Amino acid sequence: MTGRGGERRGGWRARLPGSAAPARLEGRAAVLRVYGYMFHRYRRTWRGTITSSFLYPLMYLLAMGIGLGHLVNHHLAGASSPVGFSRLGGVGYVTFIAPGLLAATAMQMATNESTYPVMEGVKWARTYLAMLAAPIEARDVQRGQLLWIATRVAISGAVFLAIMAAFGDVLSPYAVLALVASTLTGMAFAAPVAAFAVTRENSTSFPIMYRLGIVPLFLFSGTFFPITNLPGWLQVIARVTPLYHGVELCRALVLGQMNAASLAVDTGYLACLVLFGVYFGGRTFAKRLAQ
Amino acid sequence: MVEARGLTKRFGDFTAVDAVDFRIERGEAFGFLGPNGAGKTSTMRMVSCLSPVTAGELSVLGMDPRHEGPRIRGRLGLVPQEDTLDLELSVRDNLYLYGRYFDVAKAVLRPRVESLLEFAHLTDRGGDKVDDLSGGMKRRLTIARALVSEPELVILDEPTTGLDPQARHLLWDRLYRLKQDGVTLIITTHYMDEAEQLCDRLVVMDHGRIVAAGSPPSLISEWSSKEVVELRFASGRQEEMAGALGGFAERVEVLPDRVLLYVDDGDEVLLKVREAGIRPESALARRSSLEDVFLRLTGRSLVD
Ligand SMILES: Nc1ncnc2c1ncn2[C@@H]1O[C@H](COP(=O)(O)OP(=O)(O)O)[C@@H](O)[C@H]1O
Ligand SMILES: [Mg+2]
Picture (cartoon, each protein chain N blue to C red):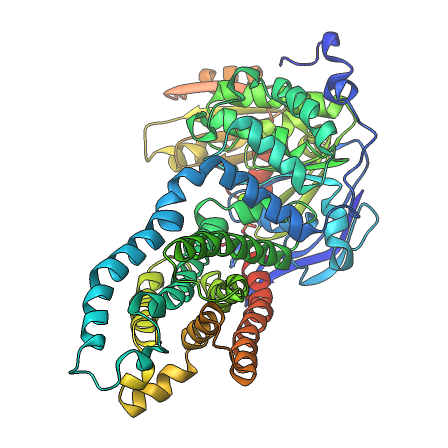
């Protein structure tokens, strides 16, 4: 057997610099260490995400604004329409849907980021398992992951808002708060969805969730038209969906048409979903990761 | 460093680890030898505070895993059975980011990563994606990664399973060095040669139970004869031939492909067998190994 030779004495430990520094428990909070990893990893791989964070919002606004918006505005301005722009809060069609799209894309991105990356962490790449060998607990992994998703949603929300402003679709300084609102909307999905995703053995349920949940919400939660256009029973359903509240919140802030009561209801509803997801996910992450 | 009494792990109705007792001292290399499914990984996961203890007592570094899991893990190095390297990132980034999980300061970490790359013989692969490494290189990287927080205790779950002989020897060499440097090692394996080479003391595990404990030589002298004669007969005839061989040995074991005679002097018995006119297809005399201990204790081979 090799390796017992005297020249090896002293070993790696003797040659390591800074040997006095032990692993501390009192350092950065474990959540931040998880977050730091995701941030660092993103710096290596961010180029692949440009399309979803930058180009999609731009394409939406261009297609809806210059294409569809023109048609709708033309129609609303015409004599055949008795209600006209008042149905849209007195603004043009693009200005009406832009804040809705802000909330809806936050939802889409957050859902995406809390399904496949969670499966990646727990099973495909097992990055979560590597974290758990360190002084990091399952709920730190969950919260670090959610914090990172919030960052991603906030960055793409900021880009979206900047593009809206450039198109002249931001009518109020309160629009800055719409960034908080859209991120909150995203997290109202990300937290419960991540809590669910971590319990899965594979990704087959994710596209189903997308088709049966996310797409209908995207279409019927007041993003593209006021829900008062819907039949009564659908209106009731629309009003209890989280995206409806996210859209209302973002729209009120961007257009400067706020009402304290609905602001409170919308924010409270979304915050409850986030809290529920964080609490429930703390349990599902622990159950899945510590067997 | 680690002490277990009546340590038990159940998954539903199934008992994976059944009331085991062991005590691991500072500075030793302690082995868990057993076939697949013996409960080695389940035991390692409890010791490394990744999996809750179902019943019994466990103390790691003088602390209770139930309450001080993160504190204990901060002083442990873990080489899990299945690698958890980030294949998308470079070799160097894997070490660096893992060190950040333990909150090792950046200034300390950078030079430490370089000396660990050297330790793992990966210096010239530092910038490569982990995905491009061979199995042996990945395993060495996982071991180097486990050392990034300078642990007092390193747990290695099947460190060389699936590697070719050359890669295994290089890995053993790295583990010797750790041992020389005074790091306490816990090694699980189903290779008896690995256990004999690396472990000062070991326990033999089967079906969740510890069936024997001691140093490799003491286990061999306790449970086996000094030497073993292996005789291979035409297939299907082992059982029949074993009957004729009973008089030559203290004990005879029949395996599907050969007959084992447990004796004091192998060459002498080999000679006697030939003189008696028995003609095996092949024959050899060797020293007893842990494989024989396992066979004696469980009636089965370690690796099938
Ligand atoms: N999470 C789990 N759920 C159910 N059974 C498990 C789980 N993990 C391990 N087992 C079972 O426990 C037994 C011991 O497994 P393990 O500790 O991995 O053994 P070893 O590492 O010695 O091969 C096996 O029969 C295995 O199927
Ligand atoms: Mg195992």
